[in-house]
Length: 180
Image: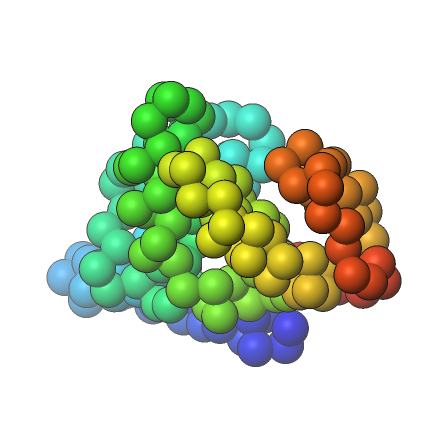
C-alpha cells in the first residue's frame, strides 16, 4: 500500500517542474516536464475518478487522450481495465473487444488485492460471455481466493449463484480490511 502512495506522489514531480519553469517564463523546459508527466502517468487517474462519479463521457475523453505505450505499469493496468469496461458498456453483445482489452491487464500491477479480486471477477464474467465457462469458473475461483473488502462478498456470492448455481465455494471467504 505504501508503494502505491509513493508512486502516486512521484507523479507530482514532473508537474511541479512544469509549474516551476512556467513561473520562470521558460516554456520549453515546462513543456518537457509536462510531456514527461503525460507519457508516464497520462489522464488515467482522472478517467478512473470520473468513472466512479458516473461521468462516463468525461472518463472516455480522458482515456481517449491518453497514450498507453509509456505509462507506468499500474496506470497501464487501470487504463486497459477502464477501456474494457467502457467497451463493454458501449456494446454489451460484443464481448470480444472488452475481452481483448482485459487480457492486456497485468493483475499484479493493480496494487491492491481488492482491485485484483474485482478484476478477476470482471474477467471471469467476460470468459463466461465468450462461452468458456470452465475458464471463467477457474478465474472466478481465483477472485474468491484473493483477499478483498468484506462488502464485496455479497457481490461474489451473487455472481456464483447466477453463473455457477450447482457449485458451492469450498470454504467461505473471510474478507480482509484492505483499502483502495
